[in-house]
Image 1: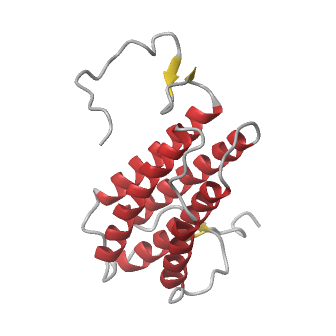
Image 2: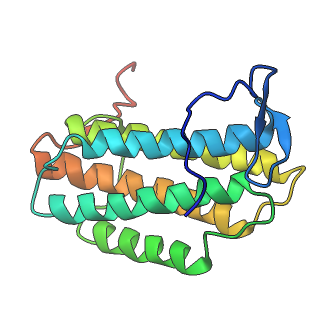
Length: 188
Protein backbone atom coordinates (compact mmCIF):
# COMPACT_ATOMS: atom_id res chain seq x y z
CA UNK A 1 0.00 0.00 0.00
CA UNK A 2 1.25 3.47 -0.85
CA UNK A 3 1.68 6.45 1.40
CA UNK A 4 -1.31 7.56 3.43
CA UNK A 5 -2.11 11.25 3.38
CA UNK A 6 -2.73 12.59 6.85
CA UNK A 7 -3.04 16.11 5.49
CA UNK A 8 -4.70 16.85 2.14
CA UNK A 9 -2.93 20.11 1.40
CA UNK A 10 0.85 20.30 1.30
CA UNK A 11 1.33 23.78 -0.19
CA UNK A 12 4.09 22.34 -2.42
CA UNK A 13 1.97 23.03 -5.50
CA UNK A 14 1.49 26.70 -4.74
CA UNK A 15 4.30 27.50 -7.16
CA UNK A 16 2.45 25.89 -10.09
CA UNK A 17 4.28 22.57 -9.94
CA UNK A 18 3.21 19.09 -8.88
CA UNK A 19 5.04 15.92 -7.96
CA UNK A 20 5.00 12.90 -10.22
CA UNK A 21 4.93 9.41 -8.78
CA UNK A 22 8.72 9.16 -9.08
CA UNK A 23 9.25 12.35 -7.07
CA UNK A 24 10.04 14.57 -10.08
CA UNK A 25 8.43 18.01 -9.97
CA UNK A 26 6.79 19.28 -13.16
CA UNK A 27 4.57 22.18 -14.16
CA UNK A 28 0.90 21.57 -13.50
CA UNK A 29 0.16 22.37 -17.13
CA UNK A 30 2.67 19.85 -18.52
CA UNK A 31 1.53 17.34 -21.12
CA UNK A 32 2.01 14.50 -18.62
CA UNK A 33 -0.20 16.12 -15.98
CA UNK A 34 -2.81 16.98 -18.62
CA UNK A 35 -2.89 13.35 -19.78
CA UNK A 36 -3.26 11.71 -16.39
CA UNK A 37 -5.57 14.49 -15.20
CA UNK A 38 -7.94 13.83 -18.09
CA UNK A 39 -7.78 10.08 -17.38
CA UNK A 40 -8.88 10.96 -13.84
CA UNK A 41 -11.68 13.12 -15.27
CA UNK A 42 -12.81 10.21 -17.48
CA UNK A 43 -12.84 7.95 -14.44
CA UNK A 44 -15.02 10.48 -12.62
CA UNK A 45 -17.40 10.67 -15.59
CA UNK A 46 -17.79 6.88 -15.46
CA UNK A 47 -18.54 7.29 -11.75
CA UNK A 48 -21.28 9.77 -12.64
CA UNK A 49 -22.67 7.20 -15.10
CA UNK A 50 -22.61 4.53 -12.41
CA UNK A 51 -24.45 6.89 -10.06
CA UNK A 52 -27.42 6.55 -12.43
CA UNK A 53 -27.69 2.94 -11.24
CA UNK A 54 -29.45 0.77 -11.63
CA UNK A 55 -28.52 0.99 -15.27
CA UNK A 56 -31.44 0.17 -17.58
CA UNK A 57 -32.11 -3.10 -19.29
CA UNK A 58 -31.24 -6.73 -18.89
CA UNK A 59 -27.53 -5.98 -19.26
CA UNK A 60 -27.49 -3.11 -16.75
CA UNK A 61 -25.78 -5.09 -14.00
CA UNK A 62 -23.18 -6.52 -16.39
CA UNK A 63 -22.44 -3.04 -17.75
CA UNK A 64 -22.11 -1.61 -14.23
CA UNK A 65 -19.71 -4.39 -13.25
CA UNK A 66 -17.66 -3.85 -16.42
CA UNK A 67 -17.52 -0.09 -15.80
CA UNK A 68 -16.31 -0.65 -12.23
CA UNK A 69 -13.50 -2.86 -13.56
CA UNK A 70 -12.67 -0.13 -16.08
CA UNK A 71 -12.53 2.46 -13.30
CA UNK A 72 -9.85 0.38 -11.57
CA UNK A 73 -7.94 0.07 -14.84
CA UNK A 74 -8.17 3.82 -15.45
CA UNK A 75 -6.72 4.42 -12.00
CA UNK A 76 -3.87 2.06 -12.95
CA UNK A 77 -3.47 3.85 -16.29
CA UNK A 78 -3.31 7.23 -14.56
CA UNK A 79 -0.60 5.82 -12.32
CA UNK A 80 1.31 4.62 -15.36
CA UNK A 81 1.19 8.12 -16.83
CA UNK A 82 2.13 9.68 -13.47
CA UNK A 83 5.20 7.47 -12.99
CA UNK A 84 7.48 7.68 -16.03
CA UNK A 85 8.63 4.20 -17.04
CA UNK A 86 5.91 2.40 -15.05
CA UNK A 87 3.78 -0.25 -16.80
CA UNK A 88 0.26 -0.93 -15.54
CA UNK A 89 -1.84 -1.48 -18.68
CA UNK A 90 -1.07 -4.53 -20.76
CA UNK A 91 -2.10 -5.95 -24.12
CA UNK A 92 -4.43 -8.36 -22.29
CA UNK A 93 -6.35 -5.33 -20.96
CA UNK A 94 -6.77 -4.02 -24.52
CA UNK A 95 -7.88 -7.47 -25.72
CA UNK A 96 -10.42 -7.71 -22.88
CA UNK A 97 -11.94 -4.39 -23.99
CA UNK A 98 -12.09 -5.66 -27.58
CA UNK A 99 -13.89 -8.83 -26.45
CA UNK A 100 -16.45 -6.80 -24.49
CA UNK A 101 -16.83 -4.40 -27.41
CA UNK A 102 -17.54 -7.26 -29.81
CA UNK A 103 -20.00 -8.91 -27.42
CA UNK A 104 -22.04 -5.76 -26.77
CA UNK A 105 -21.93 -4.63 -30.40
CA UNK A 106 -23.00 -7.95 -32.00
CA UNK A 107 -26.76 -7.66 -31.32
CA UNK A 108 -26.97 -3.95 -32.24
CA UNK A 109 -28.33 -2.93 -35.63
CA UNK A 110 -25.69 -1.64 -38.07
CA UNK A 111 -25.15 2.11 -38.04
CA UNK A 112 -26.46 3.98 -41.06
CA UNK A 113 -26.37 7.48 -39.56
CA UNK A 114 -24.40 9.38 -36.98
CA UNK A 115 -25.76 9.35 -33.45
CA UNK A 116 -26.17 12.45 -31.31
CA UNK A 117 -25.28 12.16 -27.62
CA UNK A 118 -28.51 11.42 -25.80
CA UNK A 119 -30.91 8.51 -25.67
CA UNK A 120 -31.80 8.77 -22.00
CA UNK A 121 -29.84 9.79 -18.92
CA UNK A 122 -27.54 6.77 -18.68
CA UNK A 123 -26.74 6.81 -22.41
CA UNK A 124 -26.04 10.56 -22.33
CA UNK A 125 -23.71 10.12 -19.35
CA UNK A 126 -21.96 7.31 -21.22
CA UNK A 127 -21.49 9.57 -24.26
CA UNK A 128 -19.98 12.24 -22.00
CA UNK A 129 -17.55 9.70 -20.55
CA UNK A 130 -16.69 8.62 -24.12
CA UNK A 131 -15.78 12.14 -25.18
CA UNK A 132 -13.61 12.66 -22.11
CA UNK A 133 -11.79 9.39 -22.85
CA UNK A 134 -11.22 10.64 -26.41
CA UNK A 135 -9.65 13.80 -24.99
CA UNK A 136 -7.49 11.70 -22.65
CA UNK A 137 -6.35 9.75 -25.70
CA UNK A 138 -5.49 12.95 -27.59
CA UNK A 139 -3.56 14.33 -24.62
CA UNK A 140 -1.70 11.04 -24.20
CA UNK A 141 -0.73 11.13 -27.88
CA UNK A 142 0.53 14.69 -27.33
CA UNK A 143 2.59 13.46 -24.38
CA UNK A 144 3.99 10.63 -26.50
CA UNK A 145 5.41 13.18 -28.96
CA UNK A 146 8.05 14.20 -26.40
CA UNK A 147 8.05 11.54 -23.67
CA UNK A 148 7.94 7.78 -23.64
CA UNK A 149 4.40 6.40 -23.53
CA UNK A 150 3.74 2.71 -23.96
CA UNK A 151 1.57 1.94 -27.01
CA UNK A 152 -0.74 -0.22 -24.90
CA UNK A 153 -1.82 2.92 -23.04
CA UNK A 154 -2.94 4.69 -26.20
CA UNK A 155 -4.60 1.54 -27.58
CA UNK A 156 -6.46 1.05 -24.29
CA UNK A 157 -7.91 4.57 -24.40
CA UNK A 158 -8.84 4.17 -28.07
CA UNK A 159 -10.71 0.89 -27.44
CA UNK A 160 -12.32 2.26 -24.31
CA UNK A 161 -13.87 5.18 -26.17
CA UNK A 162 -15.19 2.73 -28.78
CA UNK A 163 -16.61 0.52 -26.04
CA UNK A 164 -18.30 3.48 -24.35
CA UNK A 165 -19.89 4.41 -27.68
CA UNK A 166 -21.33 0.91 -28.01
CA UNK A 167 -22.45 0.87 -24.37
CA UNK A 168 -24.22 4.20 -24.92
CA UNK A 169 -26.09 2.59 -27.82
CA UNK A 170 -27.05 -0.39 -25.63
CA UNK A 171 -28.19 1.89 -22.80
CA UNK A 172 -30.25 4.07 -25.18
CA UNK A 173 -31.98 1.00 -26.58
CA UNK A 174 -32.53 -0.67 -23.21
CA UNK A 175 -33.88 2.52 -21.58
CA UNK A 176 -36.63 2.73 -24.20
CA UNK A 177 -35.46 6.17 -25.36
CA UNK A 178 -33.66 4.86 -28.43
CA UNK A 179 -30.79 6.48 -30.23
CA UNK A 180 -30.95 10.09 -31.34
CA UNK A 181 -29.98 10.10 -35.01
CA UNK A 182 -28.34 13.09 -36.66
CA UNK A 183 -30.68 14.52 -39.29
CA UNK A 184 -28.17 15.49 -41.94
CA UNK A 185 -30.90 16.44 -44.42
CA UNK A 186 -32.67 18.85 -42.06
CA UNK A 187 -31.34 21.95 -43.88
CA UNK A 188 -32.27 20.94 -47.41
